[in-house]
Amino acid sequence: MNLRVIREPSTAAATPGLLLIDGVFVCWTLEDVVREVKIPGETAIPAGRYDVRLSLSQRFQKVLPEVLAVPGFTGIRIHAGNTVKDTSGCVLVGRKRSEYGVLESKLALLEVLEQCRKAHTAGELMTITIENG
Image (cartoon, rainbow, N blue to C red; front, top):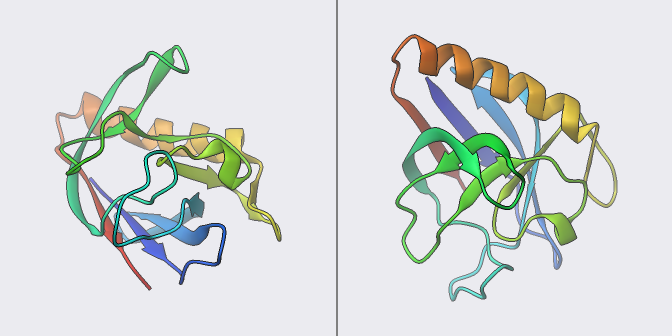
């Protein structure tokens, strides 16, 4: 299964985008600003392709998709949240967009998790491709 984040250009505060799973639109995304030099907890992960696994998040105390082997980053997750204050370098998902972020985030995350669980149960490799717009 391939998750694909297509980013729009960053604003001064955040990077909006969209998430496709196996080529089908699933939801909107929100990340920190794309930067050349990393600022911990305030920088979007570098564009590229990464493996993904389902694992227990210590921060959220639930199983979430984890983006693996991101250079200079650890603990990168796809999770619920609404504004850039919720990102901490991770990818937020939402069913709707607003001027300040994403909305209906928990519903979007349920959809992403359902598809990831199906892929995991089927033994499929999960990857995420992050593209800058």
